[in-house]
Structures are given as C-alpha cells and as structure tokens.
Length: 112
Length: 113
Image (cartoon, rainbow over all chains, first blue to last red):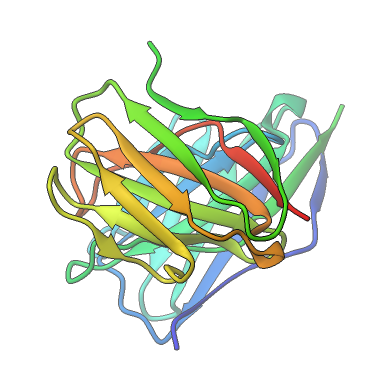
C-alpha cells in the first residue's frame, strides 16, 4: 500500500540555521508533491508545489527538492526564525486521482 | 476574507448521538473535501466533492455522510457517533482537483464519549 514517511521526531535547530525536513514515500508515483505548514490548533496552509519533472522549487527562504528515483522530497528553510516553528506536512498527488495523500508531519522548533 | 469557514469549532457528543459539521467557502471553488486528523496518522480523506452535485468516498468514509448543498457549502454528518470518531475534522476547498493547493478551515474538534 502507499506510504508516506515524515520524521515523527521534532527537529530542533538554532535560529539562523537551515532546517531540512524529509518526506519519503513508497508504492506510489506522484505527479506532484505539496508542502503545508500547520500551526497548533489551526488548519494547514499551503506553501509550495513541485511537479515530478521539476528538481527544485524556491519561494523566498523556502526550497523544495523532488527526487523521483529516491522517492524523496527535501524541504529547506534557510535563515530560520522562531516564527518558522510549526508542523510541516507533505502531500502527494497523482494525475489519476483526486486525492492527496498526506504525511503525518514533522514538528520544527527554532530556538532564539 | 473569510476563506473556508467551519462550524462548530468544538463539540462533545455521547455515543449514538448525531450531528452535522458545516463548511462554507467564499472563494468560488469547485472542489471541496472533508479530512480527519488524528495524532501520528496525518490527514485522512473522508469524502470529497469534485464539483457541485457530486460526492465520492475517500479513504475513511464509514460512519459518515456528506451533502454538497450548493457550490459554497459542503456538510459532514455523523449519524450515530462512536468514540473512534473523536478527531479534528478539517474542511478544504480548491480550484483544481489535479494540482490545486488546498485551502483549509480552522478545524472542528469533536469528542465522542
């Protein structure tokens, strides 16, 4: 069955450093991958989408890579700030399905 | 800008009671979704509506029914609540079912005793 893995342990980093979050998947060939941010008690908020034919996507301090051979996406936040502390979810989408499949998310804590 | 609005935000039910979660979006989106989120399990799709007048089952539809009342509104009904339905429920909408970003509501926290 399809499976998405995000590190369940929180990532704890110092302000100013680069945070790198991982999303691995198996038994799936997604046409695209999305990343969302979720703050406690709030709904997820869309950040970035990357398609299967794209290797890298950037938006301000965010960078996403997508390696379909490794079946992995990396999500980077450069020059991290305490305000970046949140849970980050990855989601896979296929061109034959209406349904996004979400990972369980990784919590990021940025220490001042 | 309201975006996606869910009501109620919190609800406590007894086993066997019924209730309806309401969702409305003001972005003129065609597609709407209901997810549940449980600790360590991520968001799981309950039902979705690709367009007004259509609804389809997602990954975990048992125990739920939905109604796409019009383009704006998509409700989720629990006919006979069970403790296993204790969860946080999110409604979402999008312009495109293929690649569109999902816009989520703030969630409805449901506890079934």
